[in-house]
Image 1 (cartoon, rainbow, N blue to C red):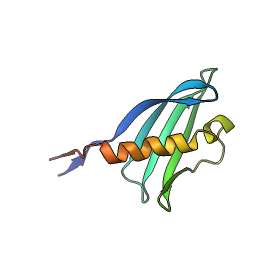
Image 2 (cartoon, rainbow, N blue to C red):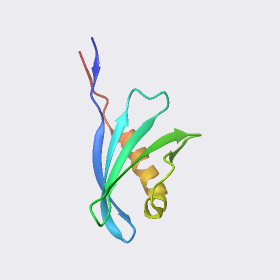
Image 3 (cartoon, rainbow, N blue to C red):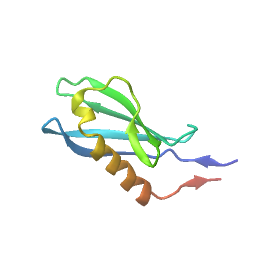
Length: 93
């Protein structure tokens, strides 16, 4: 039986004029490449959204996210692309 380790990472990105820690979790069971992402705002409220690979670009797929997250979409896309290029593949037996 094969088990695939979940890929998760965190990084700090400047959004809304402040440094924010974004947490990424790759969803292996999705039919299209997907990352679930969460980030807290200034009040401590956590915002959850997903990014999907669509036509060779990572895009935010959630309907309602604050404008400051939408304005950081390109930085988030670059972060996911970089991780996809450099992350090792881990498969356990």
